[in-house]
Amino acid sequence: MRAANPQATHKEIVDECIRRGIAFYTAKTQVQRFLKAKKTTT
Image 1 (spheres, rainbow, N blue to C red):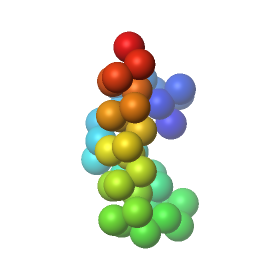
Image 2: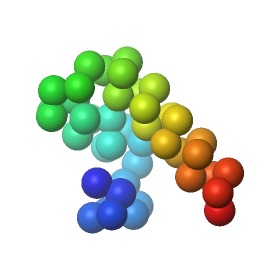
Image 3: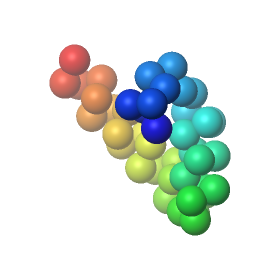
């Protein structure tokens, strides 16, 4: 989703994960981990 829309918000990403069948809290955790990892590499 970030590749298609680099300006996607945290909420938009979580909502898309939920739409694809990922549990809410799992989606939040994974997005937070992804954003943290991305932040430390740039």
